[in-house]
Length: 180
Image (tube, rainbow, N blue to C red; front, side, top):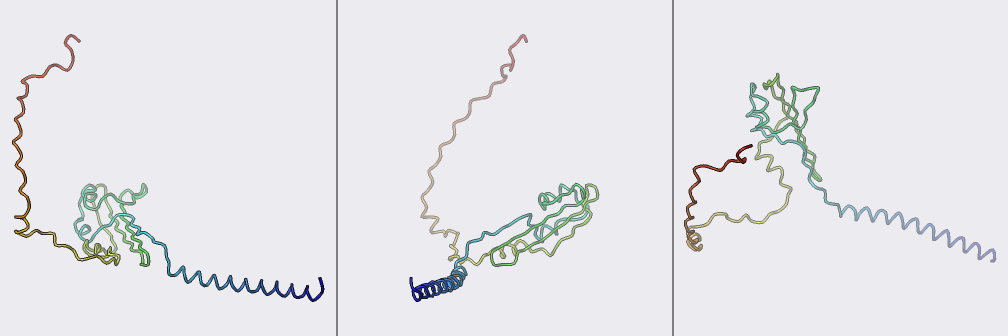
């Protein structure tokens, strides 16, 4: 191989390597643009006990632990070291939205509720409204029947009267044989 051919081959190889590096850099940029358009679906994550403003208002000092549990549910956190404290923690994480987190703590003296500490809590209606994920739903159908549509329904067949049951015996046989 002559000196000229050797330099030409080296120059071509250098040009090919440079072109491939430039192509890799532009492919990375293009792939990032495509990845920006296509994102994986991420599920909503709900953890803990949701406590509404109405539930917190129903809790009054002097209630027993069982009454509090009936209203708020089983606490998410109980501690052996803090037996007189129950923590109700709620988190809700949704794609592209800031996570919601609320904490309610109830304190007992023995078996009696002493006090409750809570973050600002939404009403049940406000919480349900916050669950709307922006999905467009169709028109809600009317769920009531008119008098005319009720008259068009077929008349249900009459059920025959059930036969009376035979009378119960006045005495039952012994459970164990006699003589034992």
